[in-house]
Length: 402
Image (cartoon, rainbow, N blue to C red; front, side):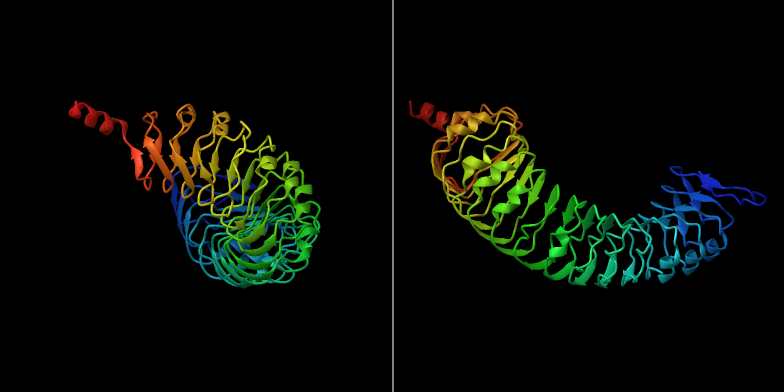
């Protein structure tokens, strides 16, 4: 606890790591070498004099209570390799002088209040850039994603607008642009980097069709995509998560979806898909979570893989008749949502036998007869089924009649 002391006389100091303490006060500007003061309670601004310490190779001031702007003088630190400022309350523009740091490989300034536009040239030498969760505006600079050493770019949760630049680094591994105000179509160049494994574009206003060439282990969308799901997407056999929810997709789910044997999460919620070839989905043995709610599906529910443990959501579709006995294989399933369909007759006893269920949502159907006795820890949602009878109430009525 306490404040950071003066370091007069430590002229040969090359490294100072005081992270994960309860230090407070202002940051001393008398340090050279490696300055790591993360996860403390430092307040005030980053001193302009920090630019005088030309031997600094790393600055980590993350997760403090710093305010003010990033000083322009940081651009004088020619030896700086890592600049980590995340989790503070820094404001103002990103200094253009950062583009002068030829040895800088990591610039991390997420979870601040930085505003203005992203300077051009800021990633000329950077391999890891994280400026997510700020207030950045304007277009993504045309050169930002193209520099050859760039591998990781996180710009989610800002106010960026305009289109996604065409030129992408061939070294790019992760690109996160979700929750901005990006428009236009997804450029075909997104499929160019063979190293790309993680692409997040959801919660923008991107339009057009799904690119069949998309390569990756995790593709996230949520835009205004239309048309059918291209069968070629099922050639991405290493895909682990496919999230194309809340779009305007139509047609059938491709029968070749069963080729995705590495898929653990499939989310097609909120589209206009009809009559899924659900037997093929059931053949994905690795699937843990299946979200198909708010579509136009109405075929029978097949016997699902017993690996489905997180959630099965078939809500707001056109399923009718009895709730199928085939659900009995889902012994480890935690959440089952069949609400807003046209299921009728009784609630089957097989649902009681699903011992891992924590939430069962059957509201707004046409179910009737007595409600089975479920385990007390299960959250039951049964409203909108006027034909259902509570066993306790029914038993009391019979006893009174006799």
